[in-house]
Image (cartoon, rainbow, N blue to C red; front, side, top):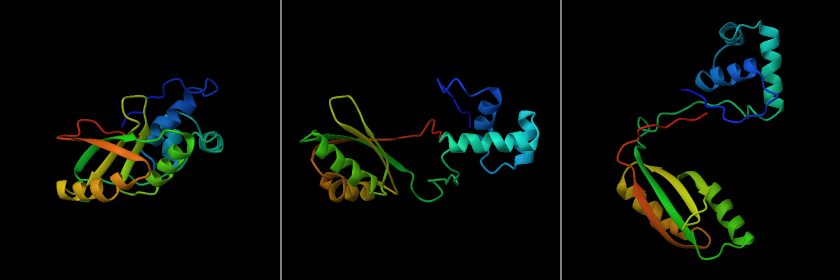
Length: 158
């Protein structure tokens, strides 16, 4: 996995960028191995990691799971249009979407619809149930439009 760092904080130097690239690809790497890969000793590497964590750039460590091997290989992107876009309605929708484990991602967008959801299920009938019972029942949803993924060509996490 390759991390694109974009226009990150200019106070990060080449070692910080190298640490972030290595950790994004190999989260369980030992400090010794990480230090070796970025050409620093253990102590400064560990200090830099701690600084990146304290600055909130590194927000945590987790296991990446293979959704296909877990039987969750049906992906749908759902356009959601709300009937009310005042702040209270947006907060209510956001909170409900965050609480729904079936919704893998939820993004407010500037478009003809208000939100784009990524939903991962085991099959189409599971998706239909989630659409009818969960997504359509979220606060202020007026209509939805679904785009079913035929093949995931590229999926990367930081």
